Structures are given as structure tokens and as C-alpha cells.
Image 1 (spheres, rainbow, N blue to C red):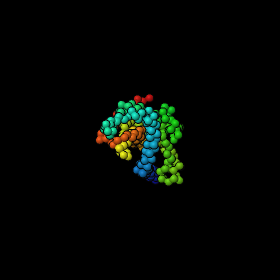
Image 2 (image 1 turned 135 degrees about the vertical axis):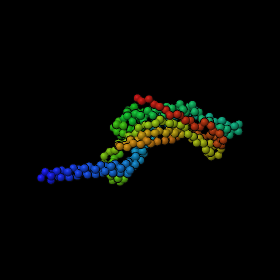
Image 3 (image 1 turned 60 degrees about the horizontal axis):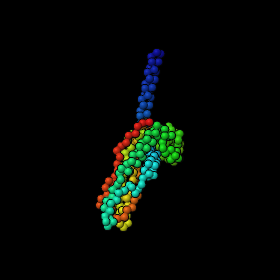
Image 4 (image 1 turned 90 degrees about the vertical axis):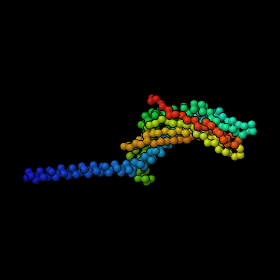
Length: 248
């Protein structure tokens, strides 16, 4: 009787060991499926939300510190010939860089505040709260995505557990001015000025994170000058080095 009891005990241990190995294999296959099939879709959607969210902060900062303050007439230095033809178009870099620096610092600070959930310190609360949940933002979450999204079916899109999407600024905010000079009508030149903002963020999902680059181009000025497009238009790109903002 003792031998039979021992054999049964050994068989039970074998069964438990087999079940344990199968459970490990099953978990590995599930995680592999989630990583290869589900996470890319979640990451793609999360990237779109991060870009949309960051664009609100970028556009508000550019409007407040550049568009609302800059004098377009002082922004360009146009030199003409005696016959009225444009000789050169230059750019007042010292003027634009003063405002661009303020906007860049504001963007960097705001993104850091969002990361920590300090929404009350962000300068542009109104626009953010019109589009995003204040309670979520105070937890450092820019968006909650329903897990039913993974089925790629509108019926299930609003069901399931909520997946938090967070962002973390990993690099410096890089900003510069871009311009386009083109012929416009007869003997006219149209100059368009844009602020280009580039940031690197870490998109954070449960059990998954990855860096993304977000680049936003915001128009700030439009000037029409009489005369053909000159052969030379100098200094029409004002660039700022990466700016560091102290933690608060």
C-alpha cells in the first residue's frame, strides 16, 4: 500500500510540473502576441494622441509669445534697387529669437508640468481642459484608451478596461524659423514665415514605452513685397540651440 501511495504522489508532482511548464509557455505566448500584434496598434494610436496633445501646447505658446507680439514690418529687412526691384530680403534674427526663446521655454516647462500632473502650473489650461479630462491630467495621463480598441471594431471600442497613455519629455525642445519665398502674381514676392518646433517624448503604455519625435510647423507671418523674387534672400533661417529648463 505504501508503494502505491508513493507512485500516486510522484504522478501528482509530475502533473503539477507539467501544468506549471504549460502555464509558463502559455504566458510567454500571450505576452508575445500582445507585444507583436496588440502593442503596435496601441502605440500608433497613442502616438496620434501624444502629437495632438503636444500640438495644443506648442500652438498656444507660439500664439502667446510670438504671433501676438511680433511686428511684421520690423521682422523683414528689404533692400530695393532704384528702379524698385528687390535687391535682397533679410531677416531680423535678434527680434525673432527673443520671442522664440520665450515660447520654447514655455513649451518645455508645460510638458514637464504635464508629466508630473501639475496641470495648474500650465499656462494654457483652458485649451487643454476643453479637450482633455482634468482628473486624468492630474495623474499625468493625457488619455485613457478603452481596451476594446484592440478588436478594431466600433462596437467594442467603448468597452473594456482603460489603458492610460502618458508622455515624458526625454530631450530638449528644438525650435527654429523657416521661410518660403515665392513669386506671387506679377512682380511680387510672397514671404511666408513659420516656427518649427521639434520635441522628443517617451510614450508610456502599460508594460511598454518607446520614444517618438513630434515636429510641428506653425505659420506666424505673411508678407507681400513689390518686386520679383530676389536672387539673394539671406539670414531667413533663425535657429535656436536646445534649451534646458530647470526642474521645479
